[in-house]
Image 1 (spheres, rainbow, N blue to C red):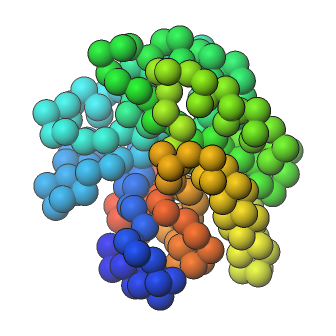
Image 2: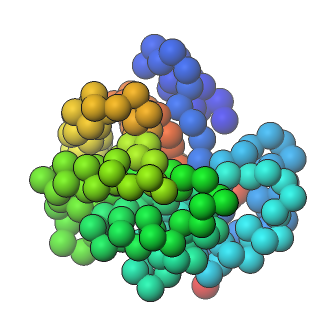
Image 3: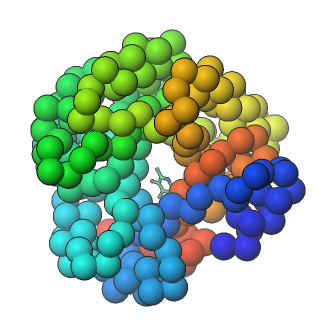
Length: 217
Ligand SMILES: *Cc1c(COP(=O)(O)O)cnc(C)c1O
């Protein structure tokens, strides 16, 4: 996507931010078309919906990321299906994913989801809980901590959005300083990926700008 290239260049990044293509509510054929064009990493919000697509496209060597809220009773299925889970926000989930990751799949890559705007309706852990989750994930051999993820509040004021991205970046820098494997700050979507990259995102999650409007329902 040229928007990512341009924003990464403007931010003087050594390498462009990674694109995660978000295919929720789009059929497997739409994902296959992007895969044919060279896209490899795909994000899904719902375990059940993803299961069918992952199965249908299993021959393509794609990398699947869960980016939707994960209920504990779906953790086993998620640990079996996905390559990455970006929405780890509580200790119970760390334990469940670590327990259920099949050894044959290798380590599950995980991001800690942070509720950076302290919205009571949103998922993600408060920034104060990040150190404990980071320590627990790093202690689990079947999990590999790769970084942090956030979905900041969609403030109309870009200054407030920038501030949330900047706070994530500072939190990320303190975590990444502990371990060279921690290389991923996942933030920014179709509407604000340039802003996110300018504040330090290494991965942007893009749906509508790639796939067009989502089918409803
Ligand atoms: C849907 C979704 C996206 C992509 O949003 P667009 O605005 O369509 O780019 C990114 N991240 C999460 C967590 C999502 O649910």
